[in-house]
Length: 569
Image (cartoon, rainbow, N blue to C red):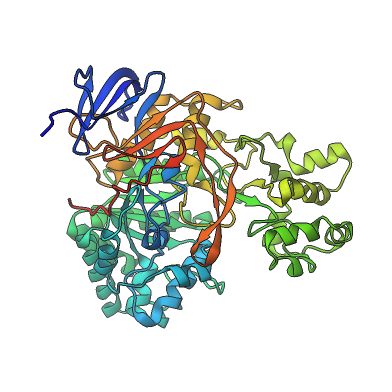
């Protein structure tokens, strides 16, 4: 047997994920693990010349929704093609296990409504080879991936499994219901889940417009589940919720859950336009809770939550116009041909767009922007559709129409929804510097027709350390730490996230100066020819998973060393 390393990465600038300064070194890899970092004399069976390149750990994304995609696909794009090597799914209380055979439609409706995955895609793609949560994990463990996948137990699925229609209609759980849900949550953690997730966000609704089953769940219910997770002794509680005027009540609940369970809690933290300063209040409360000995983190996004608008996408500013209804079912090329007709254009521009909150959002011209190439996620307000329309002396709707019609109707407009109340990302800069925050919320696998924020991790690396022009930057070593070891450690993974002997060889080789995101594009590659927005980057020379190159220069190698990973070993 050869004692040569399987792989040697030569002469790279290593940013090791610890937060320490970069240094030049070779990295030797054997049997999927790093065996040496320094000067490596041995010649590898395969070598990568990393001179002039950064070498970082693979990114660890703790907030994805690949619960469905992982049952039919092996490539977890768009995360894997952008440097991510480990994904945690099952967030926001939605997922597909446990499930009874007559409840499949309920869970599909939940995922369609909350995470914008089309019903027809899930109906054709999901194999439903499971009933219990351990069964679901067994289905995943039989598959191969280009990342490692990890899961959480979703609250909404528990409620529907235990309570049926009563759970879906958000009736209060009985003592028997609470005990059953707690036992199932513990069963899921024992089987390998990395936590329990729930949503208390009114915005999260089923496809029929009803609040998610977990919305408004009583403290008694959440407390018993938290106790059960605590008794297992591993896993966190992931929560997305509304605060608003109820911040004392809601945050008090989270603190009590953390105290009684002894488990970490992670909550979604964003700047909302309706409460533009509340994120500061939440951060202060999180810091106070940690000072008291609790472990609470805020999950933040490295850029705004952004929807993309276009004639090929699920949303555009003319969605509420009567004439749009005849265009929407057409294939994109036929739709664009009709949209080029001056009479159709005049009719859509003249018709009322509607008065719903959604339509008002789609015509928020002061906060909708041309996207640019490469995409610009922190545009100046002077570049908005409204501002440019004023300069041209035209109606904003007219300008938006013509911009979206360019590039054969494939051009997208950018609409930052959170973290942009002041017209820049100053709040994100502060969030990223807080000791009790984690980078997450990319939502890979979800919102497939309106956004692609799963690329936030690759974007954060360049925007916050190299490109930002509208404010201060962040140190490169600390940003790498946040994308790698900070997230790995937060969910209990100690075998990855840093570059050191003995750890997994999950690595990125990056041309730092060339790294940038490409424009998003629509692909029709989901089951039932469903469409999704996919965004790739250029400048990542190689992504290695367990020492095996899975992506090289933006192309999949076909290697699939990724597997389901289970908590507890």
